[in-house]
Image (cartoon, rainbow, N blue to C red; front, side, top):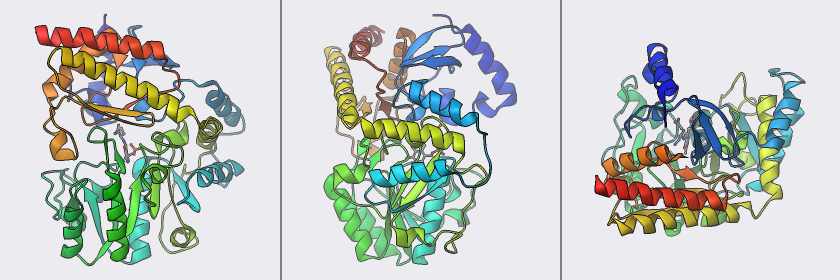
Length: 430
Ligand code: KE4
């Protein structure tokens, strides 16, 4: 398999774009090698600039649950484009998508659209601070909530303490209000509340997908909600990734815990740039222009993006069985790969939630970021490279999650498992 054109494209891109990419994880730096440049995609397949095809288990990091160039989403976008790209004025398309999302999430009475998950989370945090009049927030080590300053906190060892900026350019003053807790560890959350009486909210990925796939324990989430309630803090479920991927009705429908605010992204835009945050009316009433908490965006609610999102979510809502079909395929995939790995003495921890799947090359259960860090990263890199050569495109970081789209067939799953057997054999034989 030649990747010559990708190599040339990467070297040119690096001269003009930092790291040659517009989002760091795409650079393959954590798995070695250089990224393949995509020419086009259709259904389950990506095609790179050298003409190689790959079964895509990344799907643009989640948005493309119906695969690439889904006919109904594509038709909706083309139709919307014919009426104009953007107006900076309200459109019925925004209300239509809002109505659809509200009908799918019990915890959401009202919703505001933005253009990315980062914007959604940044705005939700500001809303929680405005609603409670408090400044501190709690996040969990290993959870990723986009790149807004107060959430770019050192994900170091999991003590519940004030974070330090992990990224230069973020003044310590901007993160002194960010407290850290350990995922699935309620005592670490209680310690944050013991340390601060000024906590506005706790934000969590209820099904964490940014330290590999680590769903929070149901009991933990129930306790988390009661600790927040007892202390007058809001609970934010960051479902930018898990929303419409783990369930079509949000993590609340599968965990039994109802959040105060939900952030959404990815699938909600059907592949176009859309983020959103929603909550019950009394919280959303704080948002400008109704209330004093300011938030805005030139392309927020963009009519073309709304059309793509509406087509995607309508299709999901009409196919209520889709998530169980996708989950069955995800379970078969990770169980099949785990079995093949065991033939070569390679341990894998596996898990799925809806159309999300995850695996760790780790001999012990993975319950938090520290556990995830014990994964054999070199083995992961060899697995990623080997599968790429076999024509299977997995997330290029062990701290990510894989996805099943409706375009991925049972046959493709079986082919992937067979390819993994070959790759594990090559890894073991050196
Ligand atoms: P965006 O700003 O990238 O649209 O969303 C940020 C975000 C917020 N919350 C959660 C739970 C997320 O997973 C994300 C973004 N996810 C990553 C993939 N793990 C996006 C891929 C990338 O950074 O290139």
